[in-house]
Image: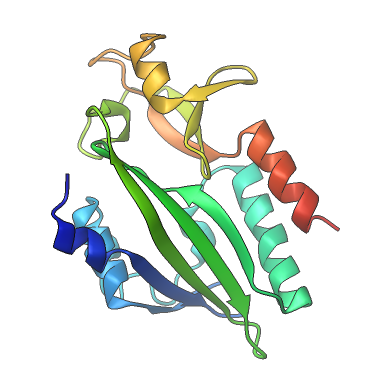
Length: 190
């Protein structure tokens, strides 16, 4: 697990996107988080000017974020919702705060609420050699779809279902499990 100082540095990650959904600001903690999670190419100002949707996969995931962004801009209210941001060794329980300003910028603050150690999960390892097979993981709760409309916890998928062996680790694509979709869409869909 990361040391206490690293976790505290990542406790709040801030970033801003413009009215056109392009990154205009990332906090220093963004870079710490990116580097410590195997994505140094996203550190510092590497994402500035890029669309946030360049970093989201799955049509349903992008659609849901568009609904959330639209709702936030139109309502001018702060939106708060929970999400997970796990690594192979830890489960991170987080909360995302989004607020719009008068120019249509969206200001994000991802706050770390709790960290729990986990048995190493090869499916989440960035350096793992991957097969051409794809598996969908929920962007919010980290359940994985192991068969059509059957979603389970990512650790359960590895341990109990034995779906993945070292030579057949699938690529991850982000989506939304049915429970999270219903929960978020019911709040933000017009």
